Amino acid sequence: MAPRGVIRSAAVVGFCTLLSRLLGLVRQMLMAALFGTGLAHSAFVVAFRIPNLLRRLFGEGALSAGLIPVYAESMTRDGRESADELAARIMVLVSAFLIVVVGTGMLLATLALMYLPLGPKAAAVLPLLRIMFPYGFLICLVAICMGVLNTFHHFTVPAITPVLLNLVWIFVLVVVCPLVGESPFARIEVVAWGVLAAGCLQLLVQVPALRRHGFRPGFSFRIWHDKRVNQVLRLMGPVAVGMGAYQVNVMVDGLLALWVAPWAPSALFCAEMVVYLPLGIFGTSVGTVLLPVFSHQAATSDISEIRCTLFRAVRTLIFLALPASVALVILAQPVTQLIYEWRGAAFDAVSTIRSARAMAFYAPGILFFALNKSLVPVFYAFQQPSIPMKIGISVVVVNFVLNVVFILTWPEGYKHAGLAFATSLCAFVETVALGRALAGRIGYAGIGSVAITSLKAGLLTLAMGILVGFGHPFLSAAFASAGKWGQLVAMAGTIAGAVGFYALAGWMLCRDEYSAVAEGRQGRKRSVSADQADGGVASGDQDHG
Image 1 (cartoon, rainbow, N blue to C red):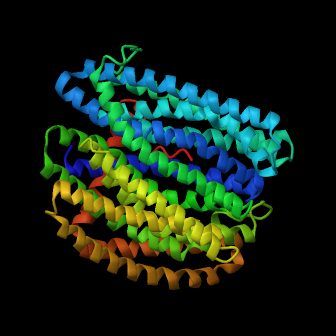
Image 2 (cartoon, rainbow, N blue to C red):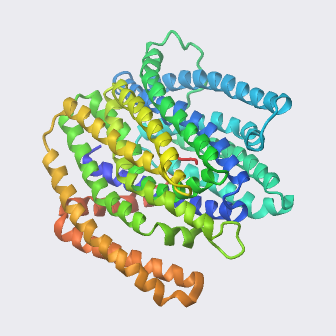
Image 3 (cartoon, rainbow, N blue to C red):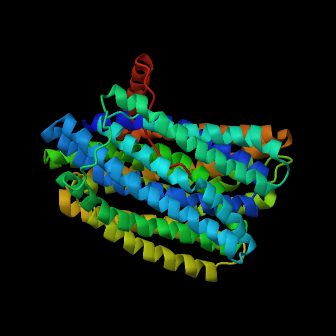
């Protein structure tokens, strides 16, 4: 796939991801309205981290990094049938392992509930964890199917898949929860069961797309006689260690937030959902497309194409993600108030302040989160996952130290925001470390174009930030008497003005990056039309949180 094709495919994934993120935002608005930032909501957030840990470790994380390069290499050298046989054996191996992990986890949670003296926080988390643990197994199988589809450059079904989770979740919140009484803990258990049901649906929708591409792996139990399986496992090992350390750190962050205050995990999660919207569109969509592209380019040892593809993607991400980061910092409180704070909802003005503080410190990391999702796939494509693993483990240690320092030193009401700031700082450190390591592998040729784009985008973003900083207070005051509609008009006017200014100025100063975005939009329209013509669905971002 050519560099321009990457941007077009990323636009397809970005469009599908945008739909998923918008539904996810609606879902979180309903969660905030029903549960606010209370203990029931925080317990759900902490419990849901566990199946997401399995997903990132054995699904789209380590498994994708190990399977996609070897699957692409096998398909190029040995043919389609051989590659499908490899995927079948990996499915059997991962399924067996996850059944043991999930069964053990559910058993331990049950024993703890039966025999241990638990505090109110643990007693709220464990029942939800026991219900949602199997979701980790289901979503890992979904991730394997997505990896295979992405290898075929099919980027539609996997991108649409998270929409099912959000639709089921919304249905449960709107229709089912009101039928189970007023207790927030009873209602949150119903939501947990809804998540499990959504996992089953997400797996089932992969089957038709795989069959259209002729993928019929069946079950192959001759696992250890296949050298490619061992190759996948060798590639998975470093990634699992690196991502495992990172995900354990995410779990620790959640526990530290719960230690800070019962409301802190849910306040952080509400902020994350807003930050994930631009991140999913800019970062995850590009990263999803890049891994199979780099894998095919690496299989033919085409370093110049890898460098060209990467730098074009990085320049596009800088052009798009930098203004999003700055705008969210400036608009953190009005955005939070507009989305979550409704009359009669459990999410009140105090909850708005708490979540807005977290959002303001998460937002600077959007650019670096996105860049990391583009840099790491290059190492995976070269089958050198140990490099990002070592960097990741170092960053995890730094993140944990910063978390503890900020919790101990930041004032009350801001300690949870310190956790968000530590995450953003560590994303920056990881970007620098990955960039330096990657330059030693593919060289610096073309890096000047990235620096020029950064300078131009920085100047444009500064001007746009000034416009947003003065424009929103003016519009907000003008429409203050209109209540929620006034907030919406003020925010829409601010965003429209900022986007219009940035697009016009970008067209004049950043022609290449602007052209890449325009090509991506055209490619998305063509791809969506083609998918509709042949009855296809889509592929993409799998942030199921």
